[in-house]
Every structure is written in C-alpha cells, then in structure tokens.
Image 1 (cartoon, rainbow, N blue to C red):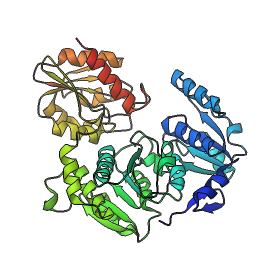
Image 2 (cartoon, rainbow, N blue to C red):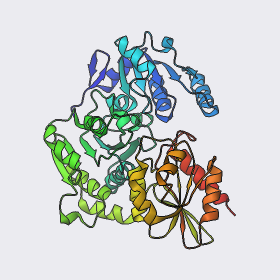
Image 3 (cartoon, rainbow, N blue to C red):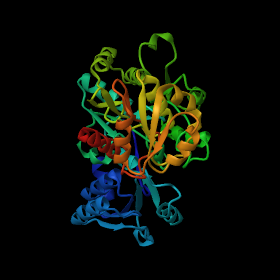
Image 4 (cartoon, helix red, strand yellow):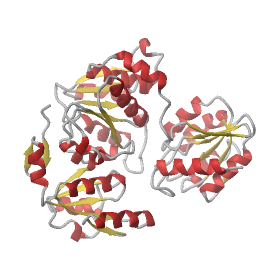
Length: 436
C-alpha cells in the first residue's frame, strides 16, 4: 500500500525513518481526554519531547496529568498557555478541541502544523484502514466490520471514536492486519493526508449544530473522509440518503452504494453498510451472515440492563442526538418512561413531539438541555425535571409500571455531567443495579 505520511516538511514511507523524524521533536497535545492521553504516550515512546495543555481541571484530569508527568511529559491544567505552543514542531489535537480554540489559532499563526490524533496514528499504521463516519450507526458498523474480518481469519483492530484511540494500538498493528476505524466529524476537521482504503459515510442528518452553522457545513466536514482517496480506493455511501447520493460524483474512488434495492430488505442499515465494505475488501459474504446472527449489539446502544418488578431498564446512552433517539423509539415494543437531557447541540426537540406522544407515557428530564426540551414538549405528556442523575433514575423507576420500560435515551451530549457517553451509560447501569 502506497500511503505517505506527513510531519512538518518531511514526507516518509519507512517506519524507522518516521521514528527518526519524530525523535527529539517538540510536540504539544491539546486536550487530555482519552485520545490526547494516548497520543501523548505514543509520541513519548517514539522519543519526542511531549507536552499537554488542557483548559479544564477536574480530579480525574489531575490524576491523568500526574501519570503523564511521571513519564516525563509536561502537563498544564485549567488554562492554555502560549508557551505550550511557541517553538513546537507539531500540535496534535483531541477530537473535542475546536478548530478556533486558542492553541490551534496560535499554532496556525506561527506556521505550526496542526493534526488530529487519527492523522498522527494513520501516518504510522502499516495496515489498510476502513474509516467509518456518519451521524448515526458508526459504532455498530465499525464493530460489525471488525468482527467480520476476524471471522474471515484476519487480524482486525476496532479503534477510533468507538472508545479505543487509534494511537494507543498503532504500534501493535501489522501490515497484513486491517483497521476498522470509527471517525467523528470533529476528527475529520484537521486531517491533511488521512487516506483510508475504504471510506464509509452511513448517513447525514442535522447534528452538532452548536459547532456547525448548518447541515451543509456538517456534510462538508464528513466529505473530508474521502478527500485523499484515489482510483484504487472505495467509497461506501448510503443510496437512501439524498445528501450522500448526490456527492458520489465528487470522489475519485470507486463508489459502492448500499440501501439501494429490495435484495437488502432483510438487513438493517448498519448490516447493509458492512456488506458493502466486505464487497470492497473481497471477503466472504457468508462470514457476514454468521456475524449478524451472533451479534449481541454494542454497549450503551439499546442495551438491556435489568428487569426489576416487570420493568425493563434500557441503556441507550450512545444516543447523543435526536435521530438516535428516534431510532430507539421506533424500535421499542412497549410503553416507556423516557429519561433524556444533557448538553444541548442546537437540536430541534419539537420535531419529534408526535413520536414522543405515541411511544412515551411520561418523561424525566435532567441536565443543561432540560428546560429547552420541557418547553418543546410541554403540551405533549407529563414531564418532571430533576437536578441530578440519580434523581432521574429514581423518578423514572417510580413512574414506570410493570410491563413497561425505562428508556434512557438522552438525545444530548454528556459533557454537562460526564466525561463521555460511556461514563454516562456506566453510571446509569450502576444506579439501576442498585435499585431495590
């Protein structure tokens, strides 16, 4: 595979040469979330002089900073200092860091390259990459592709926005392996030479409108996933999505559509996309059907937690936008009490009033978006607003009746109360399992 990486003014293909170039370079990582920590450790292991800047300060961040300091990595918390950017050879940003944040602006003003963590890892990855993005379904599809590759007898690495940072595993990846990589729009904003063998865009619906001006801008970022592909690569697109159907002529890669004809009717969209990837990779379709049959789903996506007194508790913390919750609501078969709320992304909560009225008997709201959601649904159903997450779980349990479910499908980001949706989902499960 002829895929070149980029570091400063150097182009390279040989892994040893890459390491030599990184050694003794001054590199700052912006953001001390999971990807930032992984990138800092990876760069330090290659001999770079690494520092990390993080604008927030929490006990968890202080603990992570102490561990990095023990490795000889300088860390600042609670602010971004220009001294952490001046004189650097490269700046690497975590997915949550905005492109207009101070460290990025400072670096660009000084002519310092700014790349995302996935770009950094991809430069060192010897294996083909299947990169999967979209508004919904990324985690499930990324997992399915990895499991199918494994079922075919190949070594697959399921990485990226799914929860395991690319840079945390890249040193263990071999040329004959395959990487199934979940990629968010945030990660695509700053890529330069990221070049997946197979790129997948599952769907595009309004999301992250607190970060993007409109859907067109959001789609423009998603399209960056194929900007470095050529005629030897593949782009997998959802034919049922008008936005994606129309961008097919814009790529140099070979386009494979899914969700196009009646022969796919027995599969859901994530399965259809996985089948299209298998076609691009030349793998056996039979392996897909075997994986589909045995697949139990992914954690935090319509995950059954417990049945207590005839009440089912479902963890759908992965639903960080309205469309994810719409999917959940359309797939439940019984009356439910809904727990929702979190950090607002500029969503139009009134747009799903009819579905809420049809599927939900009562709702419990918590978090920063609570008031906006309550105003949107005030004439639809009984609403209780609470201040804490434990209160929300307790209130929903008290409202639910035997034969119903408590559905936690928040429609919002987790960052008002939690580090990420996984932290939020685990907390929900812990609280449910403690109920008497």
